[in-house]
Length: 386
Image (cartoon, rainbow, N blue to C red; front, side, top):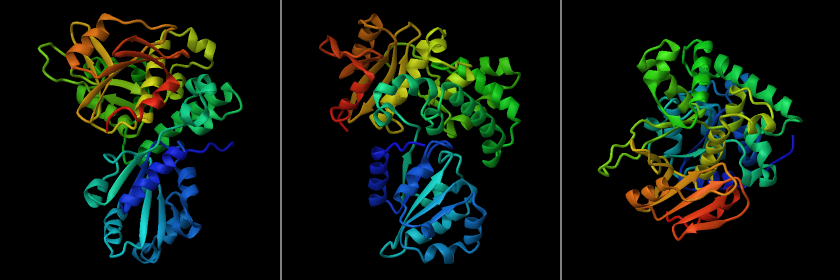
């Protein structure tokens, strides 16, 4: 498999290791965590894969084994051994900090029980996703969009091979990965829910409507959403509900985080099929949203959408450094100013509004509205105040 250097993520991990005694590298299975961690590891004796019986045997006496190590120690699939968290706290608190720990997990902190409580103040988090355009090159954007960012899917020999890999990933995730997190839900039930979410991609979450379609109750639907969100399959984008004298939507908007999995669930196998599909615009919105959040390194609590019952909307608002920046995602050749953009600018008091589209030219619609191609997002990283 060709090597793609993920230098931005490596730098994030190194920065976190310099600040914290423990760093958690989190993300879905097969997104490249292990490859990235091995590129940082100093030796096999300091690398533990908790899916490997040999490494599990090495940790039968974890205090003795881990306590002797110095430098960087990597523990992969940490969610399989939550009992290690209290020990990591003890080891991290030793004088002189002889070792730093990089722990890898396939679930968010909310699903890895005890991580936040046991390691509070000692741990930094880095969320890893699949490839993005800055890593693979924007000349391959169509391939990335269709296949998604999971390395094996993106680097497959053909679109058919990629589609088959994603179908197998979905099956394995439901039948093996979810049960390994201690969640006992019938795989077929969760798959039906996931398919339903794919149809609502880019829309406001309506638990009652989805629950009614599946014959489950409201709380069960919310529980399923929390599971898939925590496992990095779904992004739940919170609503900005500041009182502006208008009735605003309060439910989150939901997206499948990986465009390839979205297309797999929609049975979209090729670019011609995608271009003819009624979800084309929603697919682009999800791809562009994830790219902006990743490249601008949006933290939890910085990203929102906004929508009023009167019809005004904003796809994404980043709140950073006391300032507000708006983003709209438009699949079109030449986006133009809309009434909704004007309302969002004024009501939300945005510094600027950026319209992200699949074209190549960067142009201004007025002094506060700028149209940008997807590669242009990277140059915003230094201009948004942190």
